[in-house]
Amino acid sequence: MEGAISPEFISEAIAKHSTKTAIGAHQIFLGQIRADEKEDGVVQSIEFTAYREMAEKQYAEIREELFESYSLSCMHVYHSLGNIGVGEINLFVFVSSKHRKDATEACRVLVEKIKNELPIWGKEIIGEENYSWKVNR
Amino acid sequence: MEGAISPEFISEAIAKHSTKTAIGAHQIFLGQIRADEKEDGVVQSIEFTAYREMAEKQYAEIREELFESYSLSCMHVYHSLGNIGVGEINLFVFVSSKHRKDATEACRVLVEKIKNELPIWGKEIIGEENYSWKVNR
Amino acid sequence: MTIKVKLFGILADNAQANKIEISDVSTTEELLQKVNRKYPSFESVNYKISVNQDIISNDQKISTDDEIALLPPFSGG
Amino acid sequence: MTIKVKLFGILADNAQANKIEISDVSTTEELLQKVNRKYPSFESVNYKISVNQDIISNDQKISTDDEIALLPPFSGG
Picture 1: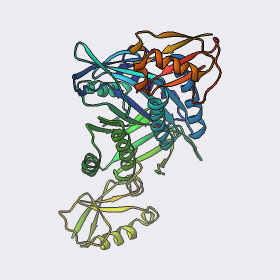
Picture 2: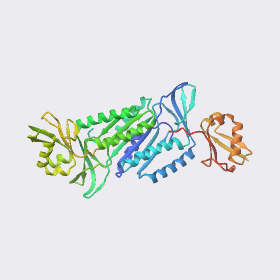
Picture 3: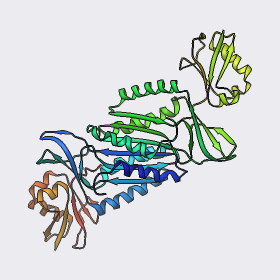
């Protein structure tokens, strides 16, 4: 999705699940842009770009794998594209299940896969003129 | 806290962290009341009671342990007391850190400890007249 | 010596009270024996005893100043 | 045969283009050699090549119909 993910978007997503009364556990991961200190200054924002068609295809495969491995009720992933400022949320991962262990473990694996397997790139904007390409650890 | 935890309460809690620009990851766990099928009927709600003073003391110890074991920025826990209906949220665990692994792992351990170590009891209200005391697995 | 004992969960339910008083006891073991005689239904509950908000597993002396509670298995979350 | 190649991240940045064209190549290996000659700065980037949205590690034939892209290390999330 374009732009930062608002807290209201997250609460609406949660509220939509109140009718799903087989769900006992929601595990949510949020990525927030950090004001990291770099050699040339402090990160102001990160500009995300993606190879969208491939990212969607990869995500569909990951989703299928996780539904096979864990007993899950729901899975939603939103990753921001465009320029996201420090303190804003750029990743919202939302996994729900009957018992907590499935949602907790699947959410952990999913976040790992999003970082390692989706063709998305972050360009860290530093000060007014500088930038550096983000490196995932 | 008394009563169910609203999605708006959760989004406000998230929004408050946007000024903490050293945070890169939020891990959130939500417990939602399930409409489980029991012998005598379907669960309508769970009525939670607690030994409050002891729960607060135990939580303070757990919190201290986790801040020692993981590199965390923030930790918040809200557990509902009173009668919480099916589909409503009765537990909100919110752990934040610079890098995701600390928040993710601490959140998992914290939820486990909340379930096993806090003196809180749930009475499952079934149909109009029946109830049974909840058993944690 | 009369000891006030807080009850929670299914124990409060069975006793129909949040607090009971047990007299002529001076240790946790004596207290538990009297409680189980007075409330036979408690024996099937795998409950623990806390003294001043700490769960106790060994016998220990208690006085009227101590905060004593009987705690069924926790089921929060 | 001229192949269109999508560029992303630091590669698009270095080439100042989201898309380049490489002519007279018929396999991924040939393509990569030409690309690295044309854009020496790419060699320091540990990038991968995808054909029709699948990452390829062995040499394979390509045609103008294939969707080819060069992908620097991912850094989403």
